[in-house]
Length: 104
Image (cartoon, helix red, strand yellow):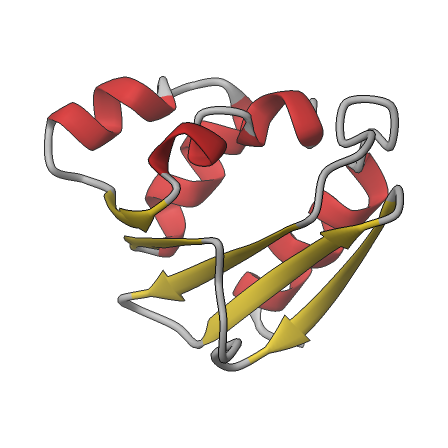
């Protein structure tokens, strides 16, 4: 299993259905140093897919290390975005909820 896939598998285990209540969203992650993955949140469920989703709600581009630092709390996601370490396209406000939906 790739390191990136392991990170997304861990995210699935941390999914907080209460925080994602009533949310219908597709988070697309384009990792510069690995593959693309997407997380589909619907009806209190979260499913992972490899590759690109055809209709993401928000697309986040970064390298794997930045994703790991944001998820661990080492790096503030908004600060990383402002520093150009994360590029976002689509519903950017949704991206700010990532650490609430997948708490450490």
